[in-house]
Amino acid sequence: MAGGSNRWIQPSLHPGSILACPFTTHEEPATYRISIDLPSGDSQRRSWVMVDKLMANRRERLGAKITTASMQQIAAVEHAIAELPGLRAPD
Image (tube, rainbow, N blue to C red; front, side, top):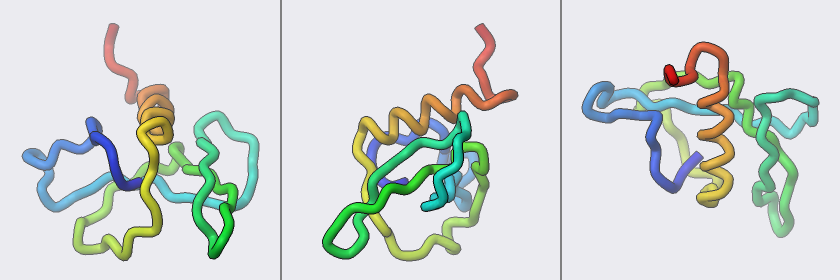
């Protein structure tokens, strides 16, 4: 997702990599899926960010930007990432 602050990527540590969450238009009940409306022609299409399928990619593999996320959407994705098992910060 583009836009907003990105607390999950530290470019100084991994300058050639980014973290990506794929999207799907297939609705499926899942704890780590965040709904988002993406532009589709002249209308909006409901999609889901698959936070549970977080993956690292090389920056060179990035394609064209498809949309920009709002700060509220980015916060929801960041919250879902923080809740993934094994990624929770120690108390």
